[in-house]
Image (cartoon, rainbow, N blue to C red; front, top):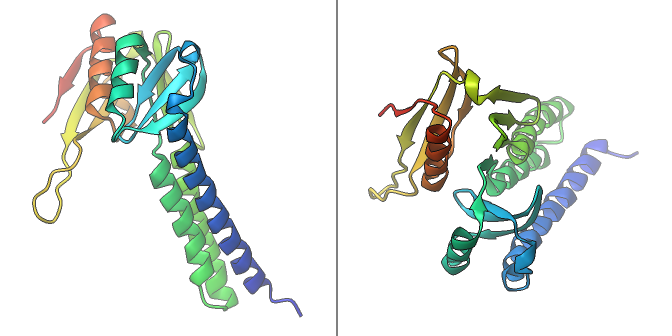
Length: 221
């Protein structure tokens, strides 16, 4: 008789290995393409806390880690326009997905516990999937935020104001990691869109957009 719980665990284990390998290959190959990409194909770029994304119109054609690639980043800054787009973090998405798989794999071979682990593991997996789907970007004169289950958009003329808050990461010995920002976009004095992670370059770009379109923006700490 087939033990379906064991089959599920084996299947999950195969998926977690496959998912991790694909992620590593994607990171490795994208970094190697920096010197191969045809510069005439680049139309714009955008940045996250850990990676740089190169665009051809609305299509992402290359991504690479920020660390150690300062020369290419300066080339982009000097020759192309940075578009405003914040996407979910790839590494966080992978960690959530692996953790979701692992909950199912390590659960005891008991039907009740297995069902609970599938529900909990599935929920954690969906957090990772949601992270990979998150986008906050500007199109024409409106901001759009989308994730796995919803999409919100707001025209610049409907924005009451924008606030931002600085967030610092401190380690065990007082080390301060990258400074990030939390922004809130208000509509009729109520928070309509909240973005939890934004780096300094993205904040500066948002400030420029706000100034151009006469949107009030203020720091709250």
